Image 1 (spheres, rainbow, N blue to C red):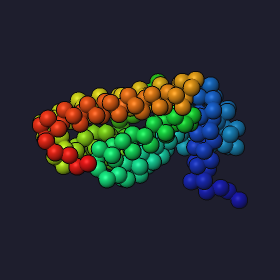
Image 2 (cartoon, helix red, strand yellow):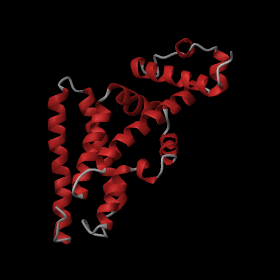
Image 3 (spheres, helix red, strand yellow):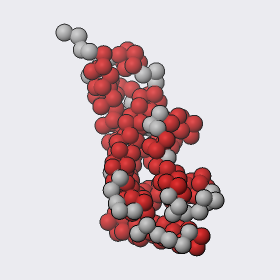
Image 4 (cartoon, rainbow, N blue to C red):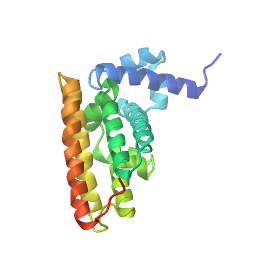
Length: 206
């Protein structure tokens, strides 16, 4: 009995996801991918034009999972500032996992061009595509920060800081210590933004 095409495609993706997480993109060959999925080379190329295309699919799935966890955590909290903190911590948890670190933070940046990564993010919707910018925009809309606060520069800096923090934790030999230190440092970063905002918006939702 022939397998459903969708099932075959899923087998290829599942096998590739395990290999990319364990061996990395560069050390995973087409024969490895074919053997892991239990399909022929022709079948693999029927669904994906290249190893890059298959990797992009895996990258998107892992990224979607990370966003789902981050947004779920950010939905909890009595204040917007607390929600940002919860979302950030969930993001760091995700990035500290070997699979997400290898596929999204390490290989994702070297295999996929910035334009390809942006295109993948754009398919996820505005909030998922840029969680930090969405939260900063929410702060501005709620009057927690000045309406004149430059949205994109602040969001870019915070996003870069969070991603750099995740890499630092994942690559550390003492991950619990690195996580603790990074979280404390990021708390200072966000506290500085809040203190700056309160100079112009003399109230708090806390």
